[in-house]
Amino acid sequence: MVEGVQRRQVEAGERYDVFHTDCPARDVVDHVTSRWGIWVLISLRSNDLRFYELRESIQGISEKMLAQTLRALVQDGLIWREVEPTTPPQVTYGLTGFGRDVGEPLTELFDRITLRLSPHSSGQA
Image (tube, rainbow, N blue to C red):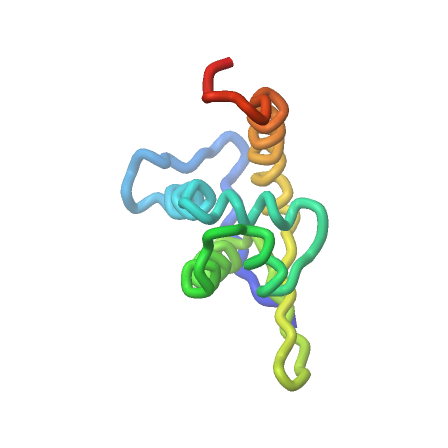
């Protein structure tokens, strides 16, 4: 069973106004740029992962925060969630097409930062 909600598509030439508080795109931007949202998207860029694999790949995140972040990103249609009916259930997460589109510039930003910084850098480049 795969879960996820797709946001409505805007008409050609139409854009959401993210500066208004009731804009649905604003919620997605908030979730993507949240403390943990960007790390979830970057962690899923190469392969689908189970909950505990994600938790191990993102050091410092609690189970509660990971669960909340995953729930929001699934609801936004950025990641999918698949539950295998085993005992205990195995839950796998991966990027949707929308998640890949959004994650691509984040991955590029991440790569630029990590390649630019030397291991002994003090943040000055």
